[in-house]
Image (tube, rainbow over all chains, first blue to last red; front, side, top):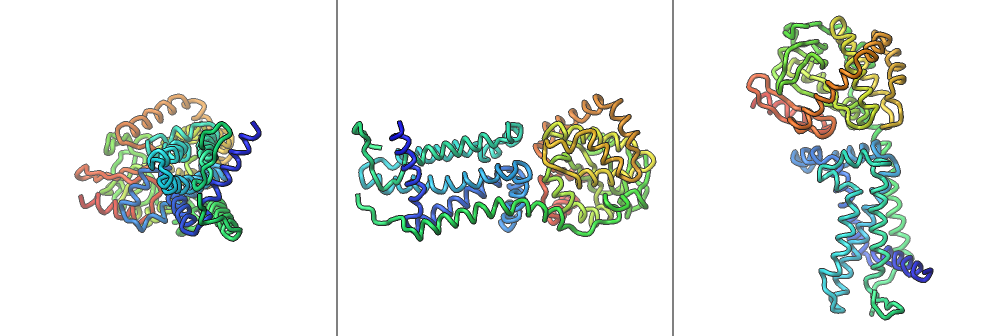
Length: 181
Length: 277
């Protein structure tokens, strides 16, 4: 049991460190994280964001700043920190997933099957982080306990589990029972 | 497997520091953005909540719903007419000239931070450039949906309006502005009946005891009316959050919608578009 936990912690740390192994990976992860944060913040008030962006891309910074302030005022420091953490975790997860495609294809693994879990984990977790707003359920999030922060935390944990299982995509580990992980 | 790139201490440090700086920066800056948005406003007009109130010099009491012909009038009016989209004005404060060509219906919740951003951002410019000039008539409509305190504040809003609408309607804005100035965290209890009454006692020209009496007597009726308004706005006009605005050309019935606390320029463009439609 302890060994299993240890392996997952190691995998999680290895996955977290993967974007830092080269400058392009680091930039890719940072870019995805920034895009995710912008998407999540804009999705907290989709109709406002749509009108602002339709008026001109120049309003993007206005919209992001206004909705960041609004998100803070609505869900507090913890909520905003969870959204930031989610954006960073998505950057790491998608960079890792792309790494799996690259390294997986070299070892014969299917590209889709290696990237799908990462996309699913990011997509499911995003429900708590803000995409519910895009689907018109922003009000529902506001009525949840702790203003939906529990759901956000749940999404973040889901991403964490994905990262722990993936580890460093450049390495194949062999479990004691003989299966590869 | 060959591992060409390695996690160097320098990269790890750079990544960690970058992440902490970026994430921490967002979380740290957010409350400052909020306070900036509250403070960085144009100077309030004499009709502002903290000033003498719109009713101070300009408020009129036109209970027939007819304009007093004062195109520079930014005062409040009590009207029994029905506006665009079958909005019954009797329950809602109306600000601006009664013969203004464009109506703006403004749905708000006193617990909504984005509404506060509008109140301190675009609203004073809207008053100065569009309402004072007689182009726009603004109708305040409560849309309480965030928590129980929202409904309490909305009910008290109606009671304050009932108290002042016939003799001193302009005093409504003092109260309205004072509540937004006192806005606290959603659900923290700042919008409890007791707190709001205490705040009302501090607003010059509003009889808090009379407001409390009205609230005790009419709360359930007012709540039912507010809920009906809210359902109508949500189902018929697509209002899903606050602040929300419908701009209505009173001459030809053309309308447009502005959602959220957008910059004044966006309101200006939308008003021009609806007016010329």
